[in-house]
Length: 497
Image (cartoon, rainbow, N blue to C red):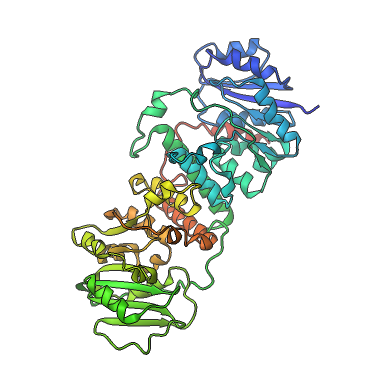
């Protein structure tokens, strides 16, 4: 028989705790550990009378710290974590434990059914959970996470994760995914409707953010997990750089003029150069720069005034052509296109006009496609979370990945031409610099929307560098408060070991 420790953090839960423990006893646990902290009601006395092992703290420990404390004292081979305000039937808890007996290391509450609902949209919490899984290159994890209860761990999983890391559930989740622990989420247990609304957490806006205190804490916890991965695996989170991508310093032109420039990167399909030039001039482009791989010859093209061909005698790295083209521009209003924009003759002039009306950056609005695409792809999920982390949720998943987009010379100087090679980093810098960013509706081809998926691992590394920039500008939680977490208790127990 496998010994099970059930861990329940509690704060003023006298209303339901007796019923909760009654259900827990139906699975015949080896021990029930209640971590009573900051309580002013009868929670402690009730749990003692019911035979629980009570660990009591006068002060509140903060979210998840009680789980870590309970795990430290637990003796069981399996640890089951629940909360003190939601009653869960004993047979459901038993099924979670039985799954571990099949050889799994962790069992989670399955929330991924929501991702299959066409109308479902990612809220900040679900977004953070999915983005973290995607950054760990575990798309299959979806929004299932150790953030939600109930969940259960084997002793092996606890030792691999570290009991103290349970004080931050997203860090625990990241370690579990990176360690490739076997995770099961066999079914859904209702915890959403029954989760008690606490006005001070769920309805109160956190200072200096557009989010509630609860949302801010969870965003900060996930950012702390990303920071943990950077500290462990490097600035790119363990992902490699594009071997074709050159990061050499490129100096921009100094003779800047008041005119429209356009950069077209040609590396996927050949162009009819004369037709392309005619189309680009119809947009009002006064300076046209083609950046081409050598396999797309341009030497036979008749020379045109204000048209420049830059031929690269090798394979262009991802987004490298944008940097090369931008460095050659002399205009103060720069439009970026790829060859498919030219072939399809996208109406890109509104992007010029948006800059001329005072915006610093005009992006292609791809949020509608993202909202309609199920399952949500990794790149746009993480971009959306990056924008949320940067406190710009209204930008949704819009980014510098997709063309057309335009930037003012002022914006380009603040971002840095070389940083265009890394769209997430460029976006993070633009938001930090408080540049005016607008999104424009434009036709979005679904095939082109997904065209960057083949570069996913390179782009995941780019995202880590963008998050690292956020940490450099703020702190290890991206500037989000920890909302009263008392980690001194955890540190004291660590030092005692």
